[in-house]
Amino acid sequence: MKTYGKTTGCVLLTVTLILAGTLAVNANDINIHGSVSQAYLKSSAYNYLTYTADGSWSYSEAMLNFSTNVSDNLRVGAQLLGRDLGPSGQNVVMIDWAFGDYNVRDEFGIRAGKVKMPFGFYNTSRDVDMVRTSILLPQSVYSEGFRSTMNAIAGVGVYGNLDGGASGEWEYEAVYGAMEFDNESFAPAYLQQMSGFAPLIGEVTTESKYAWAVALRWNTPLEGLRMGSSICGLNMDAMGKYSILVNMGDPTGYVNVPTDISLTLDIPEWWVLSAEYSYGNLTLAGEFSRLFADLDLETPMGPMEMKDRRGGYYGQGSYRLNDQFELGAYYSVFYPNWADREGENQTEDWQAWQKDICATARIDITDNWLVKLEFHNINGVGDDMYFRSWDGDVEESWTMFGVKSTFFF
Amino acid sequence: MKTKIIAAIFLLVISMTGLGLETASAETLIIVNSAVAESAVDAEMIQKIFLGKTKKWEDKTAIVPVILDEGPVHDAFLDQYLNKSAKKFSTFWKKAVFTGTGTPPSSFATEAEIIAFVASNKGAIGYIGKVDAAPANVKVLVVN
Figure: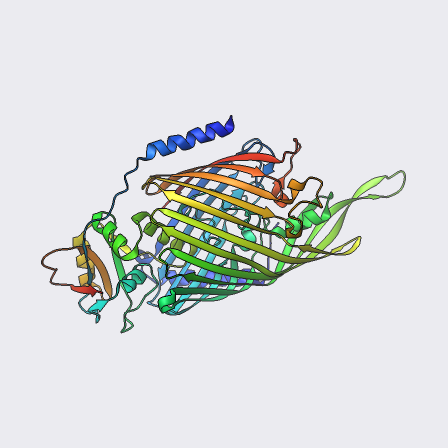
């Protein structure tokens, strides 16, 4: 499944300009950084995110970025990313971000190109394994299934830092444009969910009409405490085909017939509230997020309207023991339907949530190599859009173990 | 059983860690290129400069911060002005690099290299360990 839209051209143009810009400066002035990660996940039940029940190595990331200061005000850069997580990504190299950044003054700058989406405190760095303790970010707010959709917006953005005097410092960022979708975006997942028993076949094409995001972060007068809020919205169309069985009459019997299904997705409001406190080697954080999405589907059975009202929150803490070791833990709660948090409309109530207790040990073996060990104790299967096929027994509580190695420079 | 194995791994990790966290005790001097107009700044500005939030001097000259790779003077500077450990400072810039929002300061192995760079680059700012006689070819900035 591939996605092509107007935004692709904008990104390609930006990259061309960036390359032209980087070639115009001395090669010594170009900063090059990269990382390579490989993980292994094993769950006691279910295939979550990838095929974890039998243990899966299908979780890897590779990044390479280039940036340079063209002038005192202008900086350009681009990052290539290939990732794999079960059926998602497949290590296809994509432009993760690519933009020019013109800093007018500390209080105001402009970015144009494919810009990381400012959502919560950690969305922009969700692929940067070496800047956090855990392998997986709390899935209640940073769903891996939404990763490619939430990654970046191709368009124009503004940002700046405002000195609030005694009230601290304020940082703002806003981006408007369109999203780039790939085969791991939630559009195919929604379509698959809507088509029910019938398998999707062929490609799913998506077209992002618009997307926007606004983030405000407050570095409070209390040293180490910052708070923030971010909100985003988008509108997109998706078209796919699924195969349905049609009775052609005797003696032909049932045959598979490709059938179109289209989806218009409107997310007027998707927000997150964030807080983080850092004191010495201790860091505490918590975030709360809600999504309000309206889906209009056109199917052979007629039009359908659906609403997605998911939400979740988490609290986490991490402590660096010394230069080599860091420990962390979080408790993450996700509800696919915020109005049914007790599971009254589910066959089993635990289908209405996913509650994850996670503990991680991070070991910095050298300045350029780290290893993480992670354990999840999970109750419920609420994040069901990202469970892969599973023919074992269903269980309310299950566990998942992960180990991940990252090299970086 | 699996839970016990995981718990054992965590205990092993903790037992390997040791408890000693180095504390910074060295004193530092902030030095700037002789052409920089400022003679004194506040500590908050030092913090903003080395975190990439303030990019220009008053006369609009670009600020060029430089740092030491590591060591007690580096640790003392980060502790005194940025309230960060070397690890946190490094993590801050890694995040900026891999999200495209910033370029970290150039780093040098020795104080002599810092002095030489600051002396020869307009708008440069760095730090060295406290000495009785400041280097003649750079300006020592008073930090309020």
